[in-house]
Image (cartoon, rainbow, N blue to C red; front, side):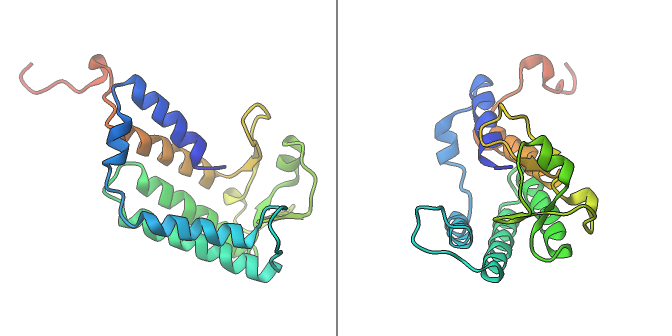
Length: 186
């Protein structure tokens, strides 16, 4: 599951509650350049079909793990922003499942069927009936109406919640008056 969709939904909700896109630009997210490095590692590991190279499985695993480690580090450097620690926690959960299962994110066969997918190994994912740390693997199928729906894990859910909260935070959304805590003495 991508961080982009929950962040975009959070941005729309933030605007409904007085959040501003300009506040996003002012958010002072530190070390953002490393996010681009992590993304470049992921593209190098799993190139789109129109790119002129392929990457061996061993190199792809190394690049993907390095990419996740970079992302966790960037999130921890920005832990002062609400939602970011949830993103880091979700990344760590996924990374634990990946490392415990030989470098691929395990996907349960039922989740794969539920998503309408059929593969043994595809990019960073591998079908496994009995993976290590089974509570952390891709175990659910996203509804097909979700753009680019796929399978997802509890770590992906934590990342999604973190991305949603981050969007609300950096855009400075304000909850409706009736949901705000009452000030003492009023």
